[in-house]
Length: 169
Image (cartoon, rainbow, N blue to C red; front, side, top):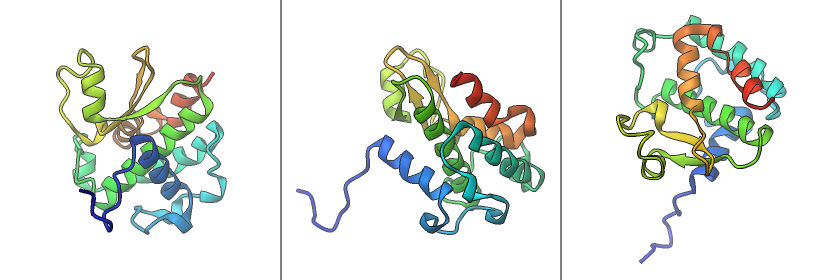
């Protein structure tokens, strides 16, 4: 029995779109991004070129990340400010990819991706970087949250703009 006050669990794509919008639109954000003053939301229009703005923001985060993020093994608490920022930035990158690349990418939560693509996920455990992926029916997989984490680790050499420009060419 579904209780009337309980909200349904959103589908992965719906949740991703909501989180991406929370990243892009200050009015929809709950104020839990780190260094929001360094994100020019007025230029986030879900175009590939808007990822240049995201690169600038992630570059600031890379330069000001705390020790647990510097370790290169940050798979932290998804409810922390850093965890929320990483997930929302990753969902924004993923939505840019979905909107601007060839059709057919859909969001899959980790468990669904693991069930659909067992060979690709054989040795993968749930983590922040693999919490959701973009997949095609043919088995192409993209992990935008992982890409954001790589940027935080390595800086601009892991540009989300360059990644998307290549995928969407």
